Length: 276
Image (tube, rainbow, N blue to C red; front, side):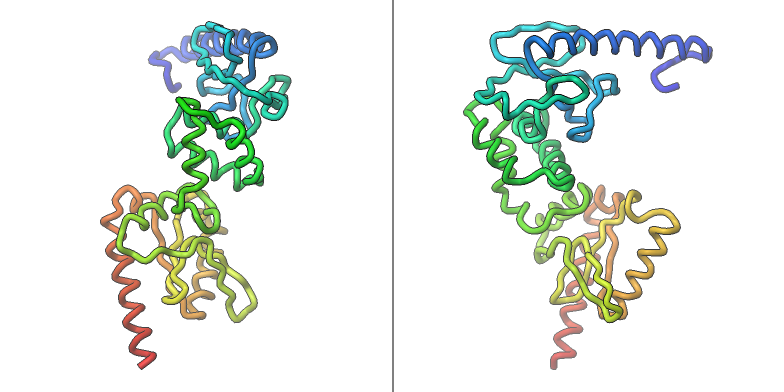
């Protein structure tokens, strides 16, 4: 069992139960504190809106300034909220920060990439962008409040265009923006002769070249692979060439980016020849 360095399974299970009991005790202490002084901050390691105090991630709480709680192994953040009635919500009986308020505060405790990933996920699940903008404008203040991170992301020109379907797409898009390759269109729709419409992760429509970010989540398995093949055949019949970028390519962009650049250059020459 992970984290239990013993050859005795019964001892390993006993240790796991002891650790779980300790964590539950800390969670209970934190819950009692929430009801009096603060609110739980949705943990950055969990999907926004789906948090559990008994999960494996560290317990984090946000309290009003002036309170100085001290609980072993619980991370405490202090926050001044002029309108707590707008930024708190009850989750499983615990007063918690809303998704928008969590995004506003997240930059104070983690990296810009984590904040951006959380922002993308929130938007994909239907959280209104206007609500996020209104919340950050109301909560923004100078200093290490975390709000500056989200404000920079909301006006980042690199985020213009359609929202990508996955974080992998966002990372690949950033890689391409750092090259000399023309900027692609995100989530480009193509209609084929059969009447079907396909959405390509990134595309260069004038060259009829598309790029799919090939992750296991969306492209592996018999049914998903069969659907990909049917789509690729339809797009090929419509004159499109589809390339795939994998996680391995993302770890080593020089192994893929030159291939993409040559493909775009070749298609451009072919189109010029046909036009002549």
